[in-house]
Length: 301
Ligand code: GDP
Image (cartoon, rainbow, N blue to C red; front, side, top):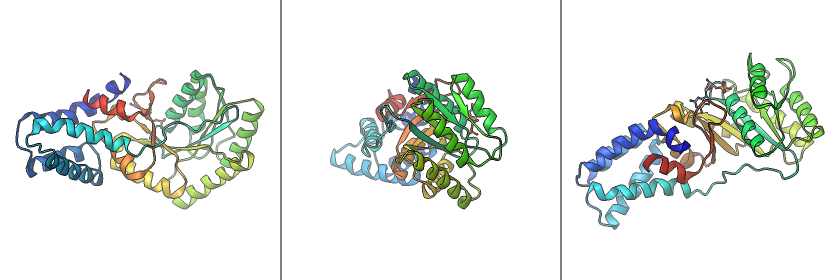
């Protein structure tokens, strides 16, 4: 249900256009496939993914002897689901049973990083876990205070130092405190400066080094937050972060605010990083684990 609501904008435009194409009862010919390509690209599915998808559809339509638009619809749904499911990526968080799980959250400013950390804190708390936050974005003005607002809202401790301090020192302190207070999950905010790739890489490496020194296999997750409304920009951000650090999962925010929900398909197909959560609104409950079947059903059912 959440998925359905959150995807309504995408459903209205993308599926609306799809239905128009299907319902005209026309011959499935080259012109048909070209229109289909246009619709998918407009939904931000991504050119490479669209080409792949439509090529498969062409072949399969030929093989199954499908000649008209009405009969090709189930095949399209099937191919879209296949595309999402076939990579069989792990969407569960790598939780350490009975020990501290450290999750590093990365992403550029404005994508919804702080909000997503708050939503995740809430989610883990609801699962009965003790959660703490580390204010590792010491660079951006207001980032620490903003995280504290979420700390209060979700009633979890925020470990911080003053603005401008060394993020690695904040992390060290946060891990010590999380361990001594018996926390299950430590969510670590980080600065999201993409302007200087080398600095970003150095900072993230230093932070990771500190974490690994304290807990050998930490961080257990590196979640990259991407804003779905930025479309192909989100894809290029992901490519840069992938070069800079090892990203284990994606939180795709603001899916409710875009008609271009097809970006999920592009991310799955072109990045080889699993989408683990999607943001479907601004409130604390508006974060859903990503389930491919639910996504496809949210679009078509
Ligand atoms: P940060 O700079 O990356 O930490 O971004 P924020 O967490 O401050 O979020 C930026 C804006 O996006 C805020 O107004 C949030 O309420 C909004 N936002 C975050 N996630 C979502 C989402 O899933 N859906 C919608 N509609 N808005 C979101």
